[in-house]
View (cartoon, rainbow, N blue to C red):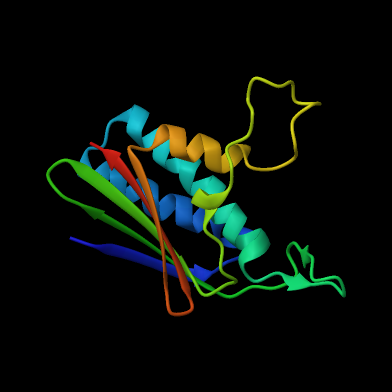
Length: 145
C-alpha cells in the first residue's frame, strides 16, 4: 500500500515529513537500523529539495538557496522485501546520481564543498533511482526490510 505526504518544500515542513516517515516505518515493524538510515536519507534529500529545487537564480544564472518554494510529495511503499521512499518535486531538473562522488580519502579542508550528503544516501540505501517525468524530478530510495 502506498502512503503519501504532500507539503510545500520548505525547511519548516521537515519535522512533519519526518514524523510521517517514522510513523509509517513503525507500523511496518521496520528495524531500528533501517529506520535510522531512512530518516537520515529523508533529511538529506528533503533539505536539498527545500534549498535548491525552487531557488531563484542571480544575474549570472547561479542558484540562490532558500529563495523559492513549491510543492513536494513524499511517498512510502513496501513489498515483501523493500521499502520505497519516493520524493517528487516540480523544481529545476537535477539528477543527484549524475554528481560525481566526493573523494572521501581527502581531508575536509581539501575536499570540494557539496556532494557528501547524496554520497551518504547512495551508500546507505540498497538502490537509488532517479527519473524526470515531464516537469517532475522523481527520486526513489530503496531499502531492504
